[in-house]
Image (cartoon, rainbow, N blue to C red; front, side, top):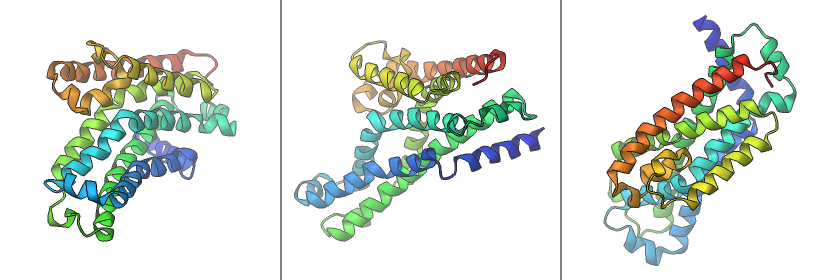
Length: 258
């Protein structure tokens, strides 16, 4: 049974290779670091002074603040929808459900692919941050990135925290993507919920709202309210577990799987 699940998960990975979900992972991870590189090269008069004291920490935080505020939740919404929609787009979803695989097998193998792509995006994002910082230092000698070590422990801790922050979003989007065959519907709902989150950022009970967890977990203004962050961490796991169970039950009991 375990061997079969591993083989089926490998098959799901092969389906995603070269698809829009894969290229979104690569391009999405490169976007903000490349923009940051352009800024460093275009405005050395400002950024050389700004990054003089602790260049790596400041550059990493600057990139991840932009990522956490908008790009990370949008990427989670998009990649979840794209992975699930692969069968619908190719009109092979009936074959998947007709195959000798359990519902749990199908459900979890896709979900693992989604989270593997998200983790790959994190790795690539951090790699692009380091590469673009070094490239800017080569182009403009005034930067001092080469004089300081890369804070690997800080980078790993930050990555783990931000990955944790999207768990609830991926569970909700996964359920929506399984529920609706039309790609636009889960995408539209996810983006609408994200935009709504930006409109209620001042809400003192924002820890209930899963689409704002990346912002709550990272942005400095929220770090001044540790009680809110702690509650958000708890509700993140509640949302994640509860919605996944509901999605699995819904998928198992629905007559029309697609």
